[in-house]
Length: 211
Image 1 (cartoon, rainbow, N blue to C red):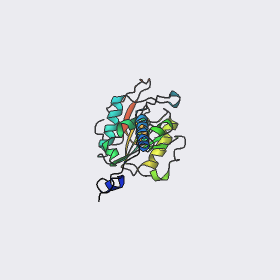
Image 2: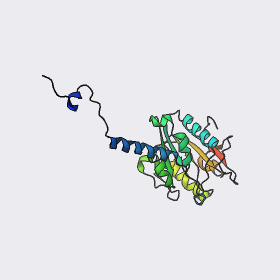
Image 3: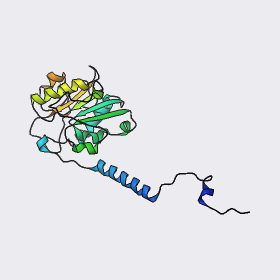
Image 4: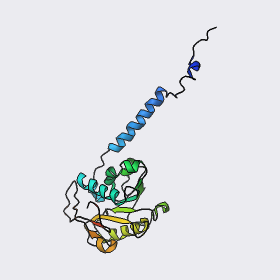
């Protein structure tokens, strides 16, 4: 006696779940939105004193950050959002490196939703407690070239630093950095997509690897 063929008879031979056309379309749309967010170019807002790094500088700084923690640890980026395009590499994706962006410009929240933490240097201690004493390396690009801004950012740095061995990279034009962070000027000369009239340099409180 033969049995009529039906979809139920195939369950034993192939039980792989199949997405409906509607579900497949929704998934494709989701991935398209994710890829579009990754490719979004956010322009400089000079009212916020934003000047993006050149590609060479961003790549070099990211390389220094990753090598300095042995490709394993936690990195905080304060007011240097475009650096994340170069930091989010395999070690980050695999979870060996965790990157957190502390940034005032909420445009970067949609692009780096998992890494973004709202930050206003005028409220230097208004940082969620889970980030206190959490970072092995902190890279800073103070948004304004003023002593007041640098002093307040330094308060945030002390709050975020894991301990006295936390490595610091500071990109700025202020000589005051050397006193505030016990840092020295690196040989590497950072540059921007649009050249700045102000003197700009990179400082570190440790012996750098590639700077």
